[in-house]
Amino acid sequence: MSKWVRAHTNIALIKYWGKENEELIIPKNNSLSLTLDAFYTDTKVTFDATLTEDQLVLDGEQQASGVLKKVSTVLDLVREQAGIKTFARVESINYVPTAAGLASSASGLAALAGAASEAAGLTLSKKDLSRLARHGSGSASRSIFGGFAEWEKGTNDEDSFATPVDDASWDIGMLFIIVKDAQKDVSSRDGMRRTVETSPFYAGWLNTLDQDLSDMKQAIKERSIKKVGTIAERNALKMHATTLGANPPFTYWSADSMKAMDAVRSIRKEGYDAYFTMDAGPNVKVICRQTDMSAIKEQLITYFDEEQIISAKPGPGIHVREN
Ligand code: 2P0
Image (cartoon, rainbow, N blue to C red; front, side, top):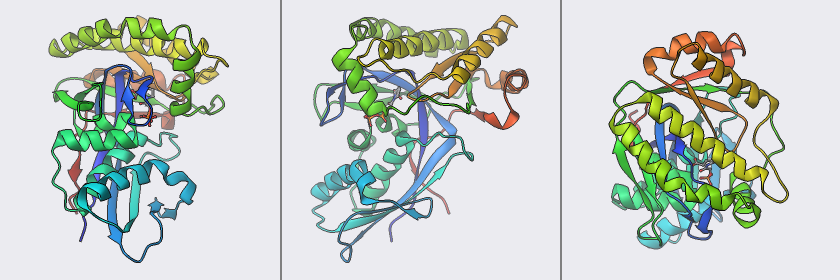
């Protein structure tokens, strides 16, 4: 009887943006993230000789086989390692607050890597789980670990994986501002490819990454929310700047994203240490002290509806779900 495995999502403070090797998902740069408690995925895998193809039942709904590419990539690797020849049924539940628009490949593909290897009877190290999750989605490599994790880009399949940096058992949290509008959807996979191939700003992004990364690690060591936030905000803005230079250009920012970023800047002027980051979508995440979260939320609901603001704290690494 296979077990349910839980993985939490993570938000990068130093972003992964661009692949060196598309097939193996080897990134152009190291990235560093914080795993969060508020959003996670539970997944169970059953290898079943009666199946004629892999199946994914997500939140109780059977998915069309066309959307299973990432899932089957991970399952194929597990089958190869375990010598399994049958297809699998994947049951997955995403715990994301209603209508948040935060469907996360990070928690989903990490939970799948854990559940599939568990169902196949493989006993993988965290390092090998991270490598396996990476094949599903790059950011999933970091969701194997709780707290802060760094995905070391490496050069090949063996040496590209995440490692834990700090357990984040200090006064840091994140508020999510779920905006109601959006730009036309460009998947992160397509967006990063287009940026690498066409944006003259991409070289500039890569040039300053090592500095951002070492500054961030130092800031985490010092437990300085001011430094962590400042570096994360600067890094996110640089990543998003590369998309404007792409051909054709694109942006993940909507009008409400800009309103949210402005709100964060205003709250900062009020004296709170609040900083923003954004990913491949219009929502804005606010890095702040856990102990300031309710006061900052009070401020944010003068700009947005209360249900648009979700609080998150550092979360744990991948684990078997307790029933
Ligand atoms: C990150 N993002 O570091 C960056 C920042 C989005 C912006 O990782 O192609 O879904 O599956 O490896 O992991 C989103 O990219 O992309 C992402 P693939 P993934 O979190």
